[in-house]
Length: 306
Image 1: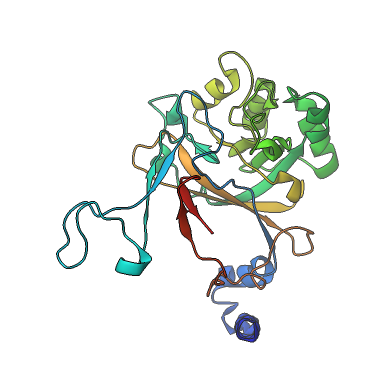
Image 2 (image 1 turned 120 degrees about the vertical axis):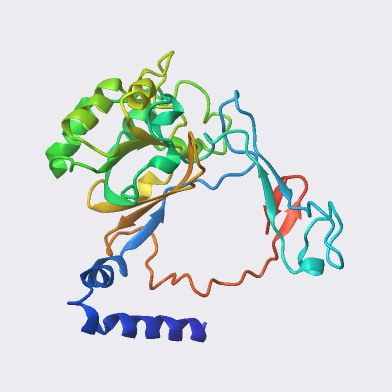
């Protein structure tokens, strides 16, 4: 613990030396704003038992094995272990790239639009808007976000910035571990809202907590998005821990070539005085803390656990 405190103190002292501030203004931005900001993960971890469309099926995890004889080291088919090889690795059999928290590129529905690896690097950090409809969803599980909800947000916070990411908070993600998560009715986004946000406000993309955009028979919202060159985020979580306005979002995703879906990670970057999240000074990330419980393979869960 004392060693960690010393590391934090050293880091703060180094960041406090602003001799480089004029020459490297982006470092100053990091020091002035990002170091003390609060970071909230709005991403589900994926595992073999998470919700997924029945047409795809579940993922399977397995301990990685040697694919050939490694003389003096490993036999073909032998599982790599800490005890014998000094490391472990995991094999993932993923039935779809539409799994867990996602970033959907338009190639998911239209072959003429970009795949996940063709998205520009500017899909990195953007203003974050959170439209809160969770009270309406509590009364009507099938409630779909309306233009009135967007206008109510703008009346309170001002016009949505071009290029922003708009997340719709329904609190549906709190059902993630329940069989009710994938059942209809579930909350959605109306087509009018999608057109308003993209055509009138020119946002980057929107996101929602369920795994579908809406409950129409042919997913009219997703159809319109993908056939007009827009992305969307699905399966996000913890939006109740994020302010409606004033935060940023960091966008990360896997980059399979020709990929029609993206295993994504979204982090909300909130003001320093925000009540949720963790700051860099509280979680430096290097070194990472050591657990008092070893990681091991659990046959019943089909994954590594502590």
